[in-house]
Image (cartoon, rainbow, N blue to C red):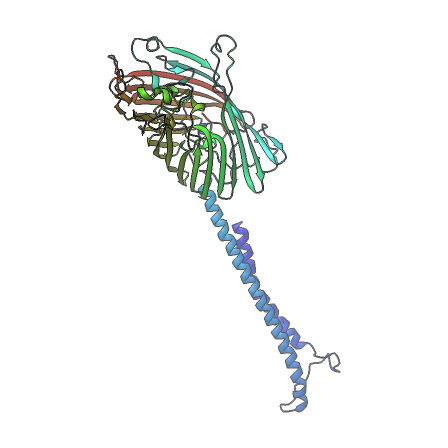
Length: 598
């Protein structure tokens, strides 16, 4: 395009003197043409009359006027043509500058695929796609080239794509066959209960376990459409890790389908709004701010509970996003709240004051005001959690994001007034996440979170709060990190992470109790489920065995993790607990989908 523009400019400049010469020649020709067709000597040159002759003056005067008029017209024509050429030259220069700007943007944005760039979102698996792309490559929120343009008939287009009107439907998902071995009984199926690694002389601590499972297999779809100039995405994803009946593994092994993601996203120009069950905005991202799984960091672990210390959630959310540039994004989200006091995914629960157990609801009771892991839909949460995030992607080699969390807690107690008393407290948290490419194929990552009442978002491994004997609320401080590296080389993908969790103690005396004189979390004599710290070290691989743009991909994966758990108090000689875990996984990924490890 630049060459064409340069040639056009050169031809235009060369035409200027030619046009000027043509104008002079035309003027000369006009001088040799008789003024009047009535002249008797039209074919002969006119003889010059002597100076001062009146006849010559009378004849020359009108001829000179006509010639001068013709020359003036020619000058005007040349000037207009020069002005037109100047305007064309300016337009060509503007177009050249615009092309250079677009090329610079293309080279800058194409590798990182920011959320508002009009590039492929669910690129089909191809022979050139590295192993890291099967589960690690970012995917943008924009529609695929195929989804927003007429169908390409080439062999590279996935056959798993349907068009209904102006909308395109793309199946997403994969088929998993997972095996897991644990040195101690420390899980619920293929998901690990990090906070309840067993202690002491119990069978859980003295027996290993081995399992096969297909429960992590995924099924879902994505819909892309243009509506009134906006890009609309609908996304649905399920797995088979639902609440199974007790005899599910005896004969039929009828695993229960479970909802994971179900949201709709509308983006127009620089603005975006999302509603539905999605990966929470607090979940670390790999690039930009996006709800698509391929743009998020939830590790490459095979363990369906991911890595200890990871901050995340898949919960109902209303999200607003601004993309001021292709390198910066800012979002605010309202997340469905839960007043959480422990008990989920093996997490330890707080000790309630004896005088308030009946009014607050005992741990696990159906009428509880606080979620203990089994009363989720019964808890009267007051207001949504508010999460804000600012993300920077100065290049494809670097992603940085910072953000904060605000939460509201409130309970009711029947005293001291006859109408009872409402007591509340505000919780808060902050996070800083970073990943950058140290050299081609090798990325370092660190994701860090600290909160005063945000334990719910660390996979429920820490309670949000304690309740004092007078009914007042005190948030529990807790924090976590997941840091490590990911390395891609041809069809191989290697990773290693360290995950750590710390829960600060928070307790007060309880004069109303003669059996448990102290309540809260982390006091001397507390249950050994009230953890102080948990740590997990993980290494793993993902090897692409085969892939085809039309028929999908086949991957073989492995993971080894070592877990240790340290409570605030253990009444026996055991001071901590350890667990070794080995995972192997064979996965077939559907073509045309956005494949992810998790």
